[in-house]
Length: 486
Image 1 (cartoon, one colour):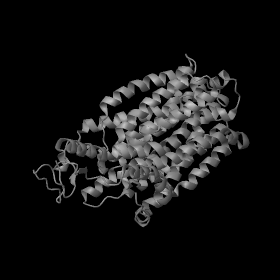
Image 2 (spheres, rainbow, N blue to C red):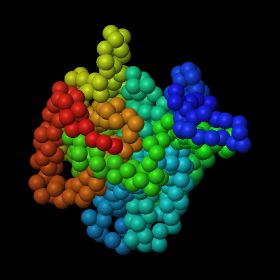
Image 3 (cartoon, rainbow, N blue to C red):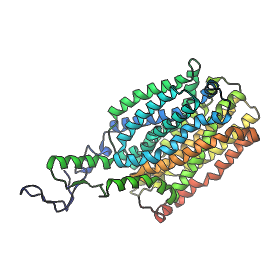
């Protein structure tokens, strides 16, 4: 048991007499205490990261898996609405926007494990409900609820990595975790298109339910609690029960009442977004990029079936270009993300969160996005071979994942103790734009064409490129000048 230097004295005269609290921390030496997730074996750490990444893959997979089946779903429910065709996909992302506002504070109040397991179970339940939906209104509601709970792993995943990994090894772990939210929407339509070749649209949800149910059971037995505050509170509670001494408390316990702690956690993401310039700037940048990406995702089926006469399976395969680009971007950013930190540590220099925004990541990443949009848009407009359009998608995908990796690792390093909250702030904003912007995608293309429509999106992305460059130079000043009490 661990005690602070001014710990309570315990006398054996009829029970404990308390003078001060007994603080419970990791056992000395701290870097050898097996209860501390930072000291877990590499195998256990990477298995945890893999499992979190896998469930974080399944939930975004569900966001776009129905995209190739939207025409069949609308026909089944006798609807011809073009708005509904986009909303059936994007309503799931709307759930992503509201879920973090509840899930993030719960995870920083009661721990990660309970949030993961409850969200995983509810994700299976709402997928089953979607498979059984009697009408399109019910399907939309179940899709929203599925997204609401499905965002749990995306909200808590970065926090889990912050619990497990030291800063100089965090980049690769973030890269593995990022595979899920980025490749889920890419692979979803491919899988959905393949299923629709042999089954009806309801099997999209049945298959997702089966896979999710299996992963939920495995996750429950494999992934342990990693949140230090929760682990230390359980340790203190055990000591209070074993000794009968109520003075034991976690060293991370602020002493605030549970109600106050929960309310603080509840407002923390909004407080970060509104009061921290670096959080606001990065979240707005990612939100805009995410909205542009989902305009592409929700219109691929229409574009490739209409312009290039792809089948349902072929329209799903149209997402592969983006996937290849993202895979290349992930390999590039994962190999370089930790590089600057390790060099500085070798030179005994202090590392900063801004080290996550080196020029060799943010410049090619931010410029690739508008470049890819230009190529994609004008290839379609001029009826150039579909391979050129896919090349444009690959360039866009490359830039998207490089920038998202930089932004997420930067925010986690800047707010390590509250990583779940800062990622929740980012997820809320980007999910809102990811859900709402696609509603105007087809209308934009019909109004000004594919070439100028995508050029407009490219100009928007180009206007945002200075944000990571400026934060690399001035982020430290803004962090210290506008420090917020969390």
